Figure 1 (cartoon, rainbow, N blue to C red):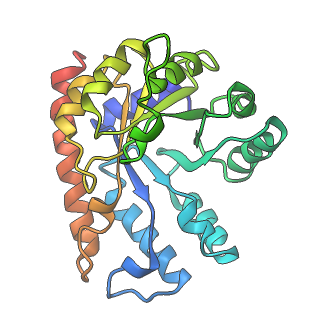
Figure 2 (cartoon, rainbow, N blue to C red):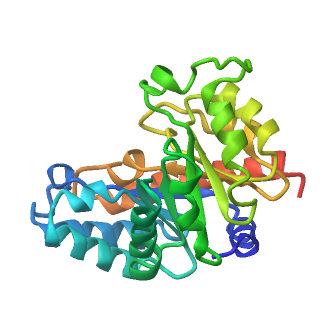
Length: 273
């Protein structure tokens, strides 16, 4: 999906919600079993009840890889089930020497047909460039993450006076362009998001950390939205596990709808469209 199509979809649906499809066998509702086939059924039912409220889905590959070959099959069938209208991000956080990254890129884009992949930039440009060889595909670069350990390295001050995450974003924005590059910025860093917008005023930003991790949707929307939207906000656990009872679909739909309605307001307030 190219940039124009993504922007069009966001404004038509009045939503910039991305739903994380990170299913855990131990957390499936009691009405389902605990086998891989039940996990696939869970994914399908979550997609069915939320697709009207979101523009994107983001399966985290670790939740599928951990199940071995059956997990890969579930991932394949889940990706095939997602409507073609929705932007699909393979949350893989890849990044290795060039020829290995090339194989990772082929797996994500040629085989799984995802629209985007998350990558870790700390090995430098040659570990990321192979992902840019696919037209109309997106590279989603880790910029400033939402986990507590982000403070271990990402906030280190360099001799230039920049924080390490600022240097990474400033350099990595030149590896691609606004039409094929996004950055991950955690919702738990709203003040830093405002500063990051000065570095990448027009790039799309993928925001994890709203919901279960405590990020505030209004705050990050105010700091992050642009006239072309420029945001995808990922919400996972608070939607897909909104209920562990027989009403899990209704609860997930209700939570997704609530976020959608809030986003509709912020698009009107902050995009000046």
